[in-house]
Image (cartoon, rainbow, N blue to C red; front, side):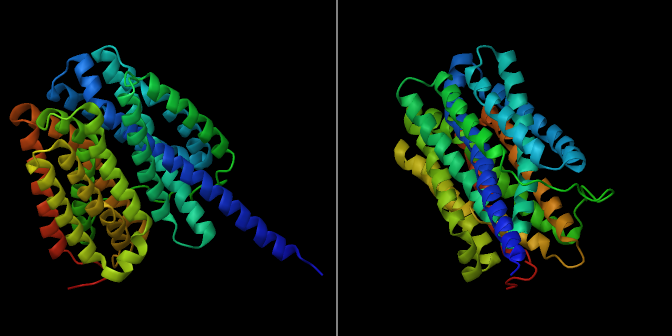
Length: 393
């Protein structure tokens, strides 16, 4: 009897399983970086004596690094596949995360954030290519679980960062120690990444959104912008506007990341049950409620918990938008998703620095009020948006 087909099938399943674990680790590491960084922002700002405007400029430099790396890594994947860039990216990213937290001068801080953004943006691109290849090999939807691990990484990074700060290790040494451990984890995962074939030469890498996709892209921009605002400014808002201690302020981002991770893990059946439009509109309204609590609550801990509602609301909006983009009539699925993702990540990278300038001019509470208004606008636009292949009214 020839059992070769069985062995081949078993080999493919084993390869897919190992690659899925490896890519999950890559997303975990990718999320841990912003988590660790976000809770250290108030300490770094105080140590360097910089204003919200200068911090906003530094975050803009970080965004510039990420935007610069994305087309470069797209080119790299086109030539060598995604496995090698993902493996190298994980190692370099872990080595870079502690640098802005350790910064002893403003110029070094700017350079460190640029490198942090450069490697974060690059790893995001190649990690998602790996994720898509694993999903294709398995023949089952898997992307949501990968992004859940990103959220879990953000939550873990924030909680560990808060613990380090509470125990006097918030000067960057604690973060460096954590990144050494994560680097070892990434090194173990690198060998199990999926060997990928080179993309077809001449295949499109980017396309401007047409009118059908533009509405989805605008919603993605708003949702990512809100996520970026909470990631970069929630801890500082709680320390400045609510007089929270750095340890308490860290729980704002932790609540946000915990809610997002948990809701993403169970997101697919929830979307199937409720539909795309209710998820988008209802999630946007939850963001409004959460930001309202964060702004209005007189107690720092309650204000911090308000950001948990933001995470709950935002968790499944982006996956819904990506799915709708892939189903848009007369638009190639890859082109639609690429366009929505480009607009979305632009919001995540560009809006937080702009919010810093607004905070410098009007105060952090007013700046967070702008985010609340954006959440309301997202609900209004979501109610008017048509979702191809899903609920239509």
